Image 1: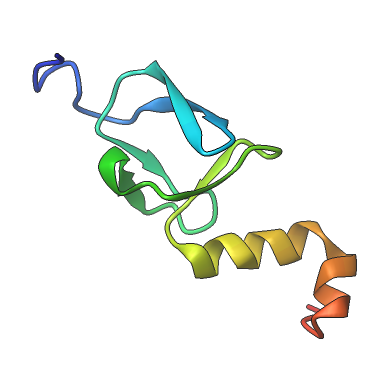
Image 2: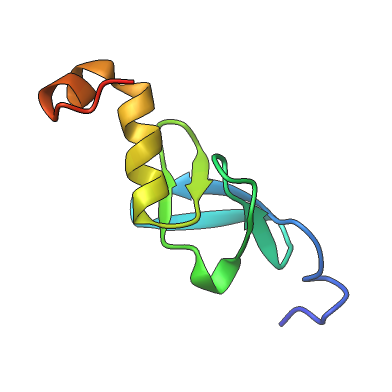
Length: 79
């Protein structure tokens, strides 16, 4: 079990399908879109392909639409 000193600061993760691997211990990661801190125990949204964490579902969708213009066009969300 890590003590508080080992788990302080920003973590570095490898994002997997339905899980993540801790590469560097820390208490949080930064949302790739909003830059807000996400405590590891609250991290629920990320992209395996882009290796990016997201603060919430809406932010995750926003990034997905930015990354895939064809999907955005299908959903009528261009720009």
